[in-house]
Length: 279
Image (cartoon, rainbow, N blue to C red; front, side, top):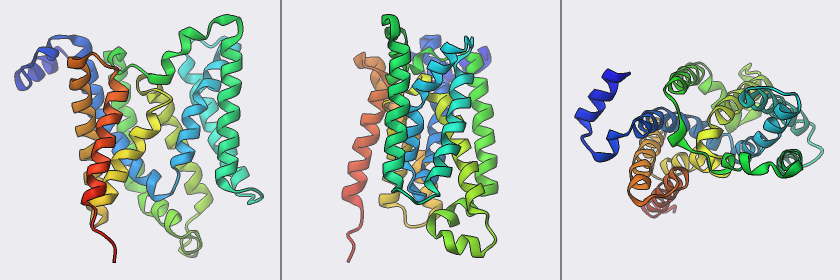
């Protein structure tokens, strides 16, 4: 890792690279942003933006349950709860008794409220408040290795299952006629989303993780003319937003996550104006 740091300092001879926490954050950004760029295209294609937002909100309940059961690692509790939350949400959604948006809204509000009630007992909520905005600067070297593993698994999933998931999102009936198990694909994708969202929440934050997932893909969709460009532009926009936001936050002393979101939002509006008019 020291050799990698020396290479980074040679390539990027800037003052902010003299701090190890900035080096770790930079490496994390190089992994997280393309990960979000790839995942975001699938989320936007399958109209699951609200779903991923609900997953982020469920993190509080996961932490709360971990506290109740005395788990030393809150990430385990968040991950288990998020997977159960996603699968249960899918099952209820398929019953078609209530609109999808309504179901997701109820689940999202309930899970966050339960987490807030449990964690705020005794006035101890302040130590969990950092989850809302996250802190990419707190990431450690060993956690970067875990991010690399998550990124590799996501790439494998993307290569193996993208066509099926895309077909499911475009036309469920057509996908079924092609012998695609749409329910299984939805569950697989939901589990992948749950793992990535929960694993990243501590560094990205509950309030902004959905924006980082959606904005690069939405911006790319404005200007891409085919599926290859759609994925490529999404990854490029995500990485540019992440790197620019990290460096800018260092020089102006702002929170890194929200700064990245602002950059991503600016790019979205730029691409929106560049989008060819229909008709």
